[in-house]
Image 1 (cartoon, rainbow, N blue to C red):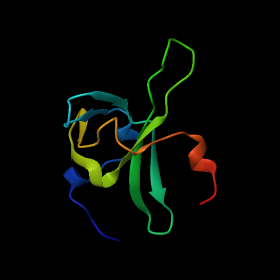
Image 2: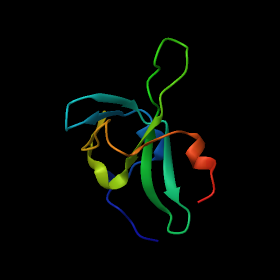
Image 3: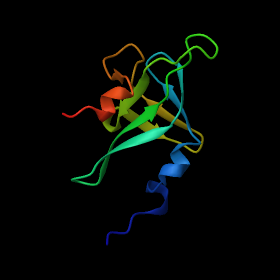
Length: 100
């Protein structure tokens, strides 16, 4: 088993407490709600931030699926990403359950 320095390890539950900020436009995307893991390799592929409500209690927009490669830095309180909300990485939660 490989040992990692304490500073480079983070539990998934710890990611949920961090706010995701886009460095492209400074927008606050929200908090991590879920992660995607490649079950074959065991690697984290993306983090998922729930979309904001269009109107109060009348549905939600699509989730932001932020590829792991788009994450610039993970700090104590925030995650900085070069992901932009207008780009093609957005997807509906239903896409997760469709066969590929």
